[in-house]
Image 1 (cartoon, rainbow, N blue to C red):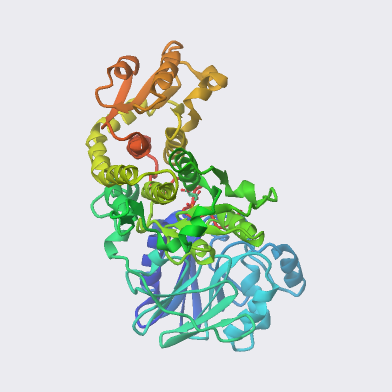
Image 2 (cartoon, protein in one colour):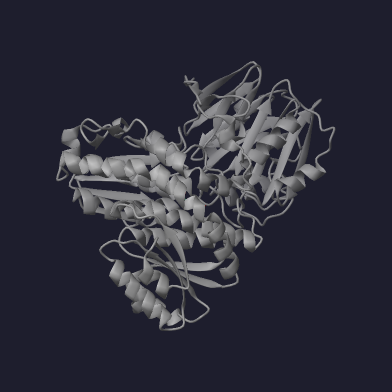
Length: 607
Ligand code: G6P
């Protein structure tokens, strides 16, 4: 949601915090601010709008060797300078940055106001510095520990006191926080991206933990002041992973990275000798896997589309009943947990609250939930009963692209594993593996269409409504194509099964509603082509993603995006990449902020 970074050490804090904020901008970008302390005085600078705006007003001589910073995705209180973080107490000597929501802030605020505290903002966060100051007796850590039990809701927070030099106090309850251990310097942040250029040694906080960091060291305790020994973990990221590396946008870079990210998701996970997959992280024996009678997948957004695709694939290939559901819906319908079901929580960030809470609800009911996540050390993988990392590397653009195809890849591997235990022969497994192995090169060939897709985006960007239509495995891809276009270009788009066209959406068809059809040469091709003809018969416009040389489709469609012929199961990979590029170029044509589209955030840690 929002992004947080705190620093203490020998270097000027303001510059480090500013750099950290830039790296966190994908976490929230409606306003930003920072506070540094120097000579017993706190200076707070904050501003509505993008981080560049904050940097413009940052005094060049802003001193201080410790401080905190925040980039916001508003929840309580409009987007304004005043509502931006950090927030301070009346005396202005305690500053706090916070992710999450304090649900009981109204009651706390009223009580504090009755005691004479004066509030400046409309945020829930502001109660925190006021509460800390009410308990403060020369010890920030102690005052924070008295404050936290009074807060209902979620938080990841860091605070500083003007007269406790070089000391950061951080805490976590439901919102990720980590400590970066440098050489004579420390960071506390919500995300690795904020600190990984400075240190790769990281301590992940758990819910209910408090960390106190100074340049010389740190200690972690629980709320009852019992020491918690934490393991320092090493982050294997290279700097390039969080740089644009010559691309104009992170979204473009991440689309073009897919041949490598798909490969990374597969690496070390294929057992050629036995024509199956090796997924040790599942923490399940073959016997336990054999006992699985059904698979259920929960997720949100793009991850849900990957789960939906997996539900088709599992049933087709492994003959195991499988369904996908929006985590937000599952959580509140008192789900029935079946003994023989295996659950997957899919999440790029590993922090999406809808998915996390649904997972916890399932676990409470006794379910075994495995995670399929990207962010290493994030909450879902830590709390799940096992799982698989997709190893996409950091995904910085808000619109998810490479994580989607890597989630798919992992589900293909899981399907292979389960299918080989059931109905798939060694030969079948070998063919499946060969098809998977060809994917990185095949996806690469789709990039040859980049210029053509750019021209199509230019041609079609003036339209206000799009339909994306696919069937079978490519139905979830149609949903994903529509979501991508909405997210980054703000153009209205709906994804449908092509078969559903006649059950309502066909009423929308006229020459102002382009339809993007996904037409692989699979068993349903003929039916999809008929749907295309129905659209053409009603003066609709058709863009078809189809197999190169498919003359019938070329004759019907206004425009085609040709893709190579591949095995039937592999089309979703080939189909989604052109749709990602189409969304990207449409957004560019319309002058949108591609990497940071309005109102969105990379990981949604509130409900
Ligand atoms: C947000 C992001 C989407 C993402 C969804 C689920 O809405 O903007 O891009 O698909 O959350 O995120 P997750 O991290 O759980 O995959």
